[in-house]
Length: 382
Image (tube, rainbow, N blue to C red; front, side, top):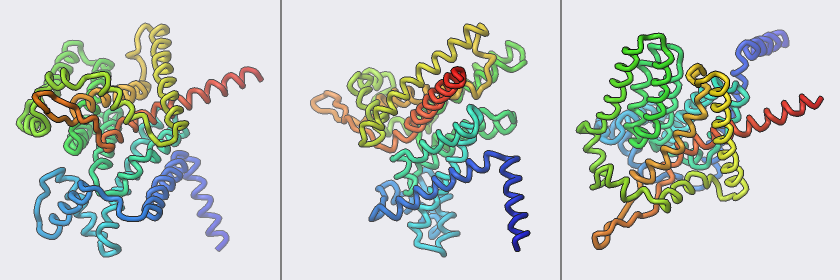
């Protein structure tokens, strides 16, 4: 018996030595699942929203009546299949919650995998833990809403985009990007532009001829630009507003609206110290990223020779600023009183899950760089 336990412990030690990321992934899994389960236990009453019940109802109709869901059918069908398999163990509402908890766990692995390519396992664990404990993501990850599903697909598309496996990157990114946009259309801008920049960088860095690079880039930009003009894009857009995009920019791109959206994104908790610290780290992150690229450009004369993962903090900054712009212009509700458009100055908290993910990534990056600078300074003194 003791020998068997010793062999098992030895085998576990071997795997942790060969695959050191496993320990961090295990700790991350415990934190992600434990925090969600504790929230289910401690918060009385069902933390469900209208949309959550709607998706649950679609999933139930799919498994009981065979009705194909009309809204985000992929998410609703997967939810229905999950309920059909696991409802023998518990109440369907509880089973449905664990579906989104499972999606959150998968998302945490994807965030970790992306982050570890940039600064290693320790940074990846720090950044992913901060993101997984973000209050709004925490609350929506125990409801049957499609926000976590959208985030999971968004993270999949980013992982595919930086993957060195060309076929996987070429086929996987478009599918997961479209699934993410299908769930959350604002991701067409907020996620789409960073993905375009990633592929533009990879094309420019490739060894293909200059003419072929230009043709591929122009083709990709044309497809991306014309997609919103498709019948699906037009139908969705004009069910949300009566104004064309240019008019929306003129009406809603105001300082007070931008300030309102920015506050929504950066006021992470009700604790001022945490909010101020997060904002300070974000500013430091901006400066560190600008300094790093200026230093590399001065040394090398360009920044194209850097690895794609070196640009991840910059892409996260772009996501934050695109979110502020997109939410200010395209998601703000309004009323028309006496021929005057009056913004509602209201933004659903669901929207800020994605930009807060990027903000917390930048926070972790800034914190990590500050600690590294202090460590190097102390090492130099000794």
